[in-house]
Length: 344
Image (cartoon, rainbow, N blue to C red):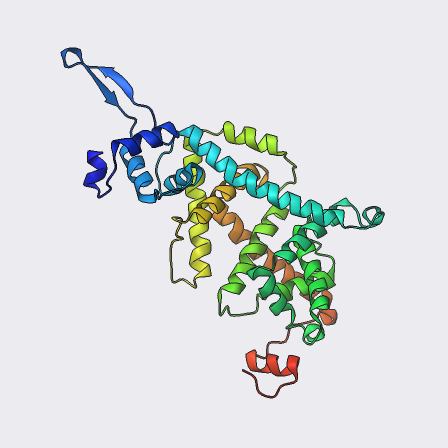
């Protein structure tokens, strides 16, 4: 308590005891000191842990969130509490996503699976689930696709069908590089030719990099049980190394997404800490099938670079059949798609 107070954190004995009961603080070791009796000795790093817990503690905050916030703040959280927090952050989100994908897959008419194949149906279910969320990536991809001459004034349904095609390709086990129509739409949706003017384009690039990085690795399906066993067998030293990789990757993403204005992501928000924990869990499994030794941050950087090269290669291969997006600027785009002569 004295050390925490010296750092500016008012921590009470009852608060320390609550954290200890919740598994967020290690139990002290009783050390015999001869005629001076016994003393309680805590593991190295406990003072930093107490300060981190105090920094992120708010009334009603869940133990799992507090453990993750302290962990990504650099503290050594007790192993059991940390692994439970990582597992909850990852598997809760995964179960919700899998349920949404299963509902989308259940809407496929009987008999179609045998025509298109299970891989395609699974990828389309993922794509339709992502489209239904209507997030920033989906909105920006729609806008990018409308730069294609044949989609400029097309109804939303037609644009979304083309967008689903792009999302399906990114969710398949391997990118369908030989499909020139798909690659032209993919190139337009990713808008590599644009100078980013807001965070939307960066969000699209990050999404594409993460999706394509899975296509770069050796495919291996793992169950939830296998991933949980992998987490249980991971040492605290390995978890610290994984934390460093995730932190670097998240910071790089944030730096690009804020157009270089912020060098580091703020992981003091519970949803960001949960997102980072899920990323750590995914990378813990995915790194086993990645070619060569590559960090998480390098993996995303290489993935985006390869996507750009593959789009350029497909464009060269297609020749005159390639449909180029129109780059006339905001005013021209509005005039062409709405018939207005007064671009805003």
